[in-house]
Image (cartoon, rainbow, N blue to C red; front, side, top):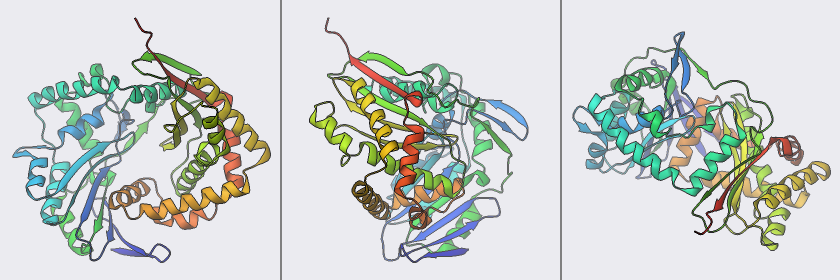
Length: 425
């Protein structure tokens, strides 16, 4: 295995691309009793339309999330229960771009790892179990749709994007999941759960060669399927709809302002752009920014106000909001402040403050085993080394932030999602 030492971070990482294509990443933490394992596939809710070995595939919305739910089923019972018996704390999640299965434990780590690798790589579905899950996930979807926080975000994505599948909720809809069959799940597992499309990252006091041995013993050989992802027709720079409004049971108008940014190709530039976008948001509307203080002093926002930069395959966007009696005034003020910064530049004192705060946050993030594993895995999926963030950070200056805001926080790229309180009957 290849060892890389990061002197500035006082970290080292062992990496190996296994014979079956799996990307293995190990971060030794000597003396720690806790170990964390993250087993992920580069497959998320956006991957509904793709070509597999030259054959076009169309799947319903919500398959990736549905598959995540069903993967814990085994012929012997349920993997969650087996892991819990060993004292492990397992869970999983599906996002727009990846699905991840993980656990942390302080004992029986190798036994738990074998279970994790086995149930994720060997699917077991029946028509009956798939049908039963439709009711469970359908109920989950209905509950989420009744949540104003979820609704305001979903509406914003529909306002920003005309074609990109990020506009479709991760879980899909009650109607879309009704189309999912056991065959659908087997087909998508075969395509995306191949080791060559996956990564395993472990953070803890483990022996790298021993982990590699377990991986080689448990995981199957790879078929290396050729996957071509289709995220729809190319998006224009402009937002699909400038405003999406509805009513729900809220006490104050709930809103999110969105600004459509550019997509970024894989490689170190994507990590650099992520850092620029995040710092630009802090400069524009972070708690230390002049805009935040003005809006707060005028009573246009409260302590719930906030947001940030989101980078996904093929797209990126800013989302910021909260509660306000006048959401449109906040929306206008954000654009006007971005225009001012584009003309005058980023204040030096604010730049220094945001720079120190961001770098400190990145360093503190290394204390989280989970955060470290997810960040290194996402880096592996998108062809960059996350632990090079100190070197990449040093290439960014305040002019990068000014250019970012000038290019992307503009009226034509903007959309607002508002949930108004229901009128009293």
